[in-house]
Image 1 (cartoon, rainbow, N blue to C red):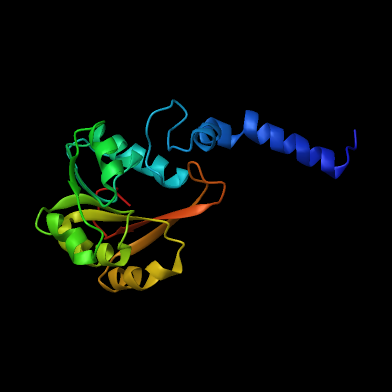
Image 2: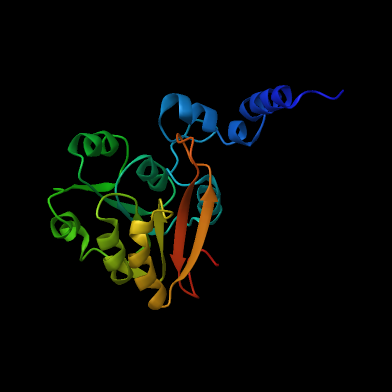
Length: 205
């Protein structure tokens, strides 16, 4: 039957929400609840789904992880790795996250990058440094010095041009860049989560 385009488009939208990819990864639920959860309802990092999938397949229980910006990802990481250290400037949000997990969470002032990063500047080395909060360029700048030899950096919202100068600095230091574009929890807009890694890395890339 040759259905009109408007009707086929409507059917496609229904299929996407009821049995397609977005339903399978749990996006419909995250959009409704406005919180990052997977299809089972468990916390997940607020990364693009391709990035979250890759990390979930390769995460190792002996890792140390630093999060610049705490959130649902903090809850996910504490379930999968040995130790999670996080910094967060929103005190109420930090209290909410800390009450739900074992992460060592530093509540920090948002006055400037130096104050924000001070609690973690000497706490490395880490297998993963996640940059997903405020002062992202400054976080990227110090990230290499906080990594193990095989450690990686995860930058969320990597599509934003304002982070490109700091990314380019890491590329000049020998890091490689893998940009994982796609849908992400809650948001109806696509995003990009980038992995910055060296030849030898914990992900085996």
